[in-house]
Picture 1: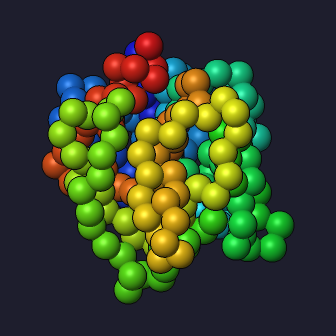
Picture 2: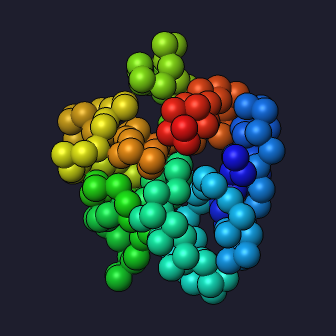
Length: 196
Ligand code: GLN
């Protein structure tokens, strides 16, 4: 199985490193031809509005959207979660996504860059031990559709618990960044459970 990491912007190198730690040699994806060769995709953290505009410039936006709709296993962290959401709030005017997961995410829900934080969260389907989660201008999930499985939640500043890791069949998304920790259980879960 060939796993690609969308390498237009954001922390794609950290995802490649996480894959390598799981024994998988990932490939950087920037062109339609590179996209044709992969079986699964990771969309990194970064800035979703920039990822959209670069995906259009590099002519891969529609192709990625179609591959996702056709069943390509895909994992998105943070900005990648936003890219996989069917709906966004606090979006930039007219901001598009690849979509695929029946969720509404709120961009920058946990606050601005200065409000970034780390916490251990429980996600029993992914790992028996708590996952060390790093949130950086992170979104949270405000609404989930019937076919979405919530894998982890976290309490926001509004005092309510919000999903921060979700799965819908072949699609996985986290509001946090496992790729910048040395806990690769989310990547292992993606490779072993979502891609199989
Ligand atoms: N707030 C960013 C966005 O809207 C996501 C931040 C991140 O990926 N760390 O795309």
